[in-house]
Image: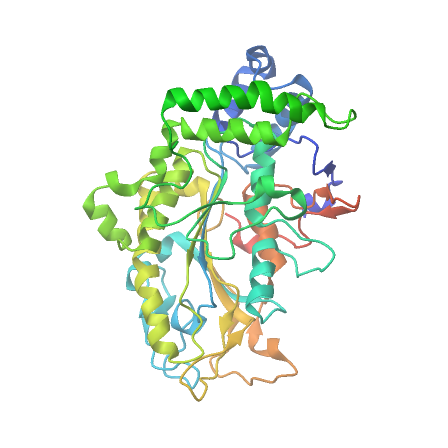
Length: 461
């Protein structure tokens, strides 16, 4: 593949490198590709050396048809934590011994059926594609979550950055003065994405139900008193802090100072309104389900429109070791309206081509129904839905057997065209304009590729 034959560029985690999905990337792209590099440099938006790098990458991507010069690429991840059952969602096998009581329903994509738990999503399936043969080697929740969110298996010597953190770094290297975080996790629980070896700067910004105020962005004191505090911070505390730093370090900039200024930009930004869904029509809130998850998904669509590049919304309740049918149906009651309405809204607002939607969890559930009427952990063939952002619509990758042999020695014998987690990551990064073969430098000086996967060409538009 093209990107595999390119020589990877080595970047230190502390170096600057051009990112292609920044908050104001539409301005940079139009100016670079339309008015030329000189015009932007004259405005002082960015240094000339970095400018030439960005210009070359943008021109190359334009020639490859990978980006729209007017719009950055975004990703919304609907994270189904706990292990959704493929058999009760995206890959039903009704009437078979593994199918349980779930029935299948037709969708807007000819020949493709979904479980009857997702009637609204079925009506939007012509906008999406399914991978029904995702496989991993991790059957434990914590290890599998790490695997899916980072694209790597857990390594005791290194913490890998989450997908959103990689995207965040690519963008923040170009546009440092952002008004809202590039990576946001809504209803994250204990598993919000981490920056790993890139550092905490690239951790996800966490927030709860969008019906509640965004945490820590409103000052508890008045403007005048706040300004006095900031003046003391900038003029007294910060100089003393800088004076104690090693001479070899940049004495004019500290992470403390940059973090404070970033927080102030966000506190003063008009873009904060994107977090608040209360001004949406009641009909739109109802369409998304008007649940914490539904409101989170609605907020995600607003946030990518306002400049966030990666928004992750978590829905729990899928860990169905007992009463599988009841638990899966209950979780789908929140997922179905939110997912269907998200696809519809992005399409109506001409945002789907530049917003990738990924919906899935850390693994699936066993074909066997256990003695407690539940299904257990199953990483050997589960489903992920993908739509928009450069992913082809109307495709189904892989297949699971309706009457599997369930040979413990050969768990993949019942899965056709298996897709690895790292291949999903490489494909996602590719459509987002990130060179997944690029090498980043870890803190111990070890160069490491962003992903070791290969692009799933059949998924590309």
